[in-house]
Length: 96
Image 1: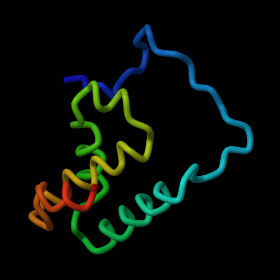
Image 2 (image 1 turned 90 degrees about the vertical axis):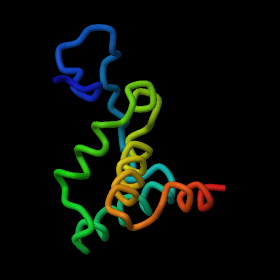
Image 3 (image 1 turned 45 degrees about the horizontal axis):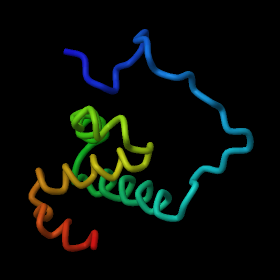
């Protein structure tokens, strides 16, 4: 079954635009998401395959509207809830 992230060969999507001298992170929060993911994988909360699957399970409209690290954050949050580390309500409280 294809998921929305599997767009290879599909028409209707713009080409990839390369950003010259692109920084590793465009905002501090992106670096924090990267570090969180590394720490959670390193601590054994989830593995890289589970993380990738969580990102790929995003609803198509949300996936297409999200930036790269927004997708990562969504995957992290989904796994934290699925693994019982925290609840969805606890995550919503922190986002305010």
